[in-house]
Image 1 (tube, rainbow, N blue to C red):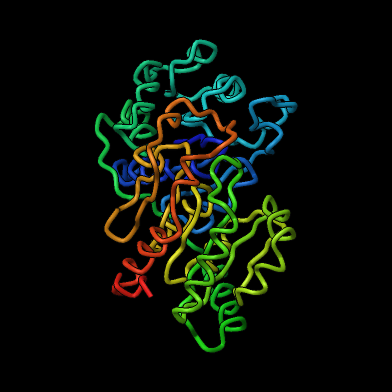
Image 2: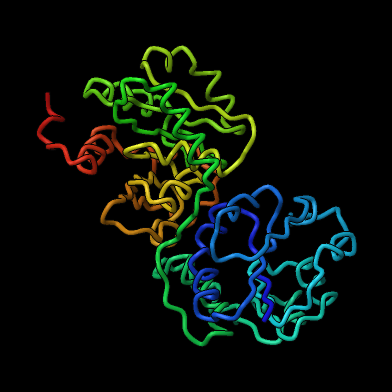
Amino acid sequence: MNALYICQNAIGDIITSLPSIHFLKEKCKDISLDICVSESYADVFLADIHINSVIAVPKEWYGMNTVLPTIDIVSRFTKHYDLVVDIMCIPQTAELIKKIHPEKAIGIGFDDVVHAYDDYLPQEQWAAWDNGDRTASYCFADIVQLYTKECSLKDPELYITEKAQKQGREWMEKNNPKQRLVIALNPGAGNEAKRWPMLNFIELARELKEREFLPLFIFGPKESFLFQRYSENLAKTGSLIFHSEIFSIQPLAGILNQCGLVISNDCAVMHVSAAIGRPTIGIFGPSYSKIWFPYSRKKNRVIERNVPCRKNCRGVCSHFSCLTEIHLKEVLQTSLELLDLSIDEIDR
């Protein structure tokens, strides 16, 4: 049996959909499972033991405002599919389904694409996830459940390639010859409204350094301005810097896998860290952890403030109270708790 799973177009959505992908493969033992994903995020699946093949499509086609006709990418899909699971559910994925003619297609019953599916999740059931009583992983599983009729989930699990693991070890051996315990700090996020103040991260690095940990700042291509603006402050903390001008999941995962703890804003780095099994602290601003942090709280933590304006926030804000009310001492204390240190050490 051949199945195609069409992923969403953001790393958080992709990683939180991994449990439903893995469940589908484990539930249907005879299934050959292909993944359709934007080429920007295809390396999420490079080492995934549940996936038979990855069909990476141009990001120009995968966006909400596509400029690439679907007919131009149809030739990439050479199999006949018995099942298509579409969790993107936009006009071009619906058009793709019509052109490849699967035996059965399932998705969400949005008015402009519902015609493409043989069975679909009602809009009101999909919209109910905004209440925050279910994680994103279970909401994506609702779609798979249209086929399997049941869906028991584990935490999201992202597999790291051997190459990336080796590169991560070699990078750390070169930059941390004394083998100190490394704490990764990620001050970036694609949405500015999700960024805990940079100066707080810098002060946190100083506090960790005083306790003999080695801070490591993570910067991707979207955070170059942060790196440049605060370069002098960063140098004074004595921290390591990992700055990549290319967004690539596997090298990042290889580096994070060498860290004792990762402290991150709610963004791709947070999801990658938790999904590879690193102890992770997620600092949340306007988005809800009950939806977007489907990871075990035994070795992970969430820090957030449920301020009055949070529910209606659309990422345009002048005061960012949901983040500015999160104090350095709380993040430090939570970090030390996860590192199995006495919280009494905080008060000097």
